[in-house]
Length: 257
Picture 1 (cartoon, rainbow, N blue to C red):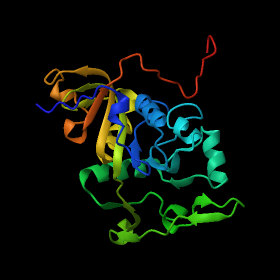
Picture 2 (picture 1 turned 90 degrees about the horizontal axis):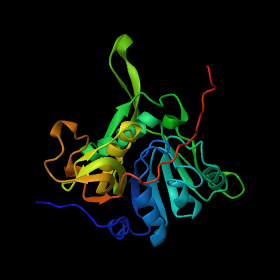
Picture 3 (picture 1 turned 60 degrees about the vertical axis):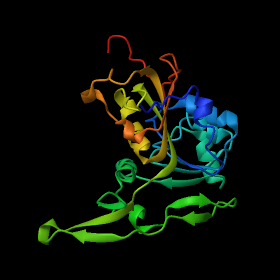
Picture 4 (picture 1 turned 180 degrees about the vertical axis):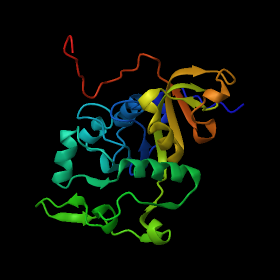
């Protein structure tokens, strides 16, 4: 039996070196692998290139690595809830590859599926395809690094002809993800919004480390209930159901409305 269970988050991330690339699950603050992120922070790993839908908030999720200046580059689709992210980007401390959300999801999935690149209509006619989006600013506010132009091709004939932009797949050195349930073989089950990017991030990482709330024995999971098969997962850490879970923006309805 292949037992992928590791005793602690610290041990599971101990071999992630400075300069590594990471795919990190989470959708807003839902499904953030916070125990693994905190372990990475504690061990001092730096100069990271991170691919994730967003970068958490100032004091939670990937935001704690960002606040400690451990992240060199982010590849994300949404960056609107983190003031420190904005500050670091505009002052030239952080590189950002801004990517449409659906395109980012497919780039991760394609990387995990062994597909080198794909064509999509998303971004055609914009700077996503034409290039020129700021990736890194100089300290004086000028653009130090801009996105390059991408290959655009036409597919279809006559009235069905459409332009498509070429997007390359993403693979990373490691992936950090959160799941509700996992077994010792690495089969994972996600819950609700946590399923949005965690499976895709897991697929893209050459070594995937999963924190799970409940660890079960092989055979306990209904195969039809498994969202991500263990072939994509290399290490599993049980963090318990009481792992902190933050709400990005709490909204309370007015009584009677």
